Length: 444
Picture 1 (cartoon, helix red, strand yellow):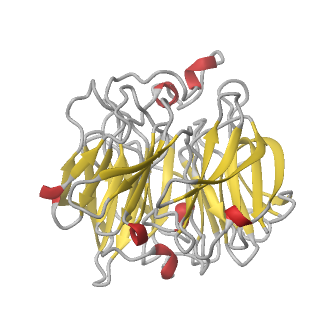
Picture 2 (cartoon, helix red, strand yellow):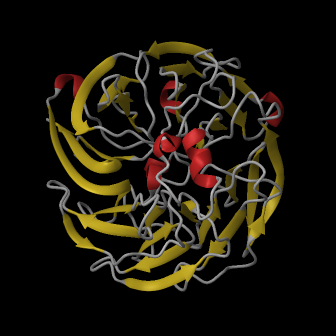
C-alpha cells in the first residue's frame, strides 16, 4: 500500500503539514484533523487582489506563503510573485520582487524546501527566495523555453519539474536541479511525448523513488537512479482514440494505485498553450480562455485506476456518461473509505466512486460544478471543493465522502472559478485561491 502523505515527513521539504501543493508528492490532498462543518458555523474572510492566486503553502506554524502570476494575456510582460500573508486577514506581510517568467502566462508552483528557502517556478524560470524578506537568492532560466507546471522535491532534496506540452508539440522536458544553486543535476530528460498534467512522486519503504508523468497517450514512470532520471518499463496507455477523449491532468497516488482523469486540454488550455510565448496574445483572447466552452471531443469524462503492481488490471469508469466531458484538475482517492471523487467541470456533476471491488461503481452523484483541487479530511470524512453556480458565483461546499451528502455551502464572494488549489489550514479552516480572489473559511 502507498504511504499517506500526511502521516510522514518528506525529507525534501521543510517540516510542515502542507509544504507543497496537494500536501505532498503523492497528491493525496488529505489533511490531519476535521472540519465538522455540518455542526459548525462558517466564518469567511475574502480578499480581492487582482492577481492570479495559485496556491498557499505553510512553512512554520502560521507562516503562510502564496504564489501566483499575473494573468497578462496582452499588454506589459507578465511576471511571477510570492507573498507571505497574514493567516487571518490575508493581507500581504511581504512581497517578492517581480519574478521573470520568460513572458509565459501559466500557474506555476511554490514549495517550502528543507534548506529553508521558498522555491518558486513560473513560466520558464525558477527562483530560490529568502523566507524572511522574499528577496531573490538564486535565479535560473530553465532549459525548455515554455511554461512549467508543478515542482517536487525528491528525498535527496533535488528538485524535479517539467514543461507543459500538448499533443503534437514534441516531447516534454523533465529537469532536475540542485536546490541550493539551482544548477542542473544530470541531463534533462525528454519524454517521447508531450505532457500536460503535473508530476507526482512516491518514495517507498524500500527506498525506491519514482516520478509519475501523465503524457499525451501514456502514464509514464521515471526511476530515480542516483543523479539520473530514467524511463521505467512501467507505463500504461490510457488514450488511443484521440478524437474521443482529451489529455490527462495530474495523477493521485493512493491505496495501491495511480488515479487520473482525462479530458483536460479544454479549449482554454489549448488556446493558452498553442501560442508562444504561452498565453500571450496580440489581442485579448476573450472567450478563448473560458473553461466553460464546449469540449473539442465527444467522449464522456473518465476516471482511471492503475494498480502500481499489476498494470494488466487497470480499469476506467465513466461516472457521468455524458459526452463532451472535461476537467481542469485531477481526481482524489480516499483509501480510508475506498472512495474516489471525480467530476465533470463542463457538464457539471460530482461523483463518489466505490473502489472496494475489482470493478469500480458509482456510489453517489451530486449536482454541482466543481473545477479545482480539493482538500479531504479523512478523520471526519469531509471533502471540500468548489461549486460554480449557474448565477456565476463560486462557492465552497463541504461534502460527505461516503454518502455524497452536501454538509455545508459557503458564499466566499468569488465570481471566477478555475483549477487552482485549496489548502488545509490546520484550525478547522481552508484557504482558497483563484484569479483575483483569495479566501479563508473557518468553522467554529
